[in-house]
Length: 191
Image (cartoon, rainbow, N blue to C red):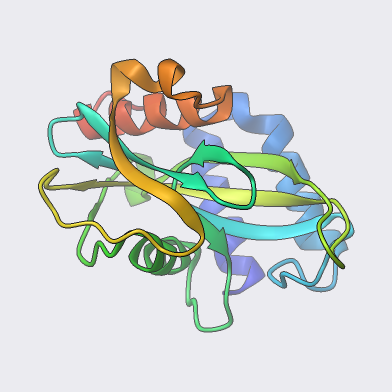
């Protein structure tokens, strides 16, 4: 993964979602001002992560996992790795590792990108790691809702959740925003 490719992806996203200006400015500073923005060992201020919002083909359900370490319902995702050519490739790798899904269809938004959302959130200190930020690039995918799933050791549970029941499941506002944007992209009504 390289800075120029990520910057180009963020520029496409900025044209489609100008309301994300403050988060995009934080991403730009991370890419410009830090030595290793893709390294999970860069804690000040943090590093880039990649995640996947997976909808069933009808847009009725979203795939969520109950993260073991964070004890929260989240979309599959995680740290960028050196073998990830692009953030999309990183999101796909994480999705395969955490769910067993092998061939999801990326959603196509403005400019041909599957980037649905960007989010900067704090990860609490644990063990030898200080509290730090994850600069999450969030991609949208659609799959057959009947596809077999395999939960990884990083999660307690992996399940299809009815979109209208996200709040009941305990999903936070960031996940709700992500799902709403992915649904809009699936339906072709994103900007």
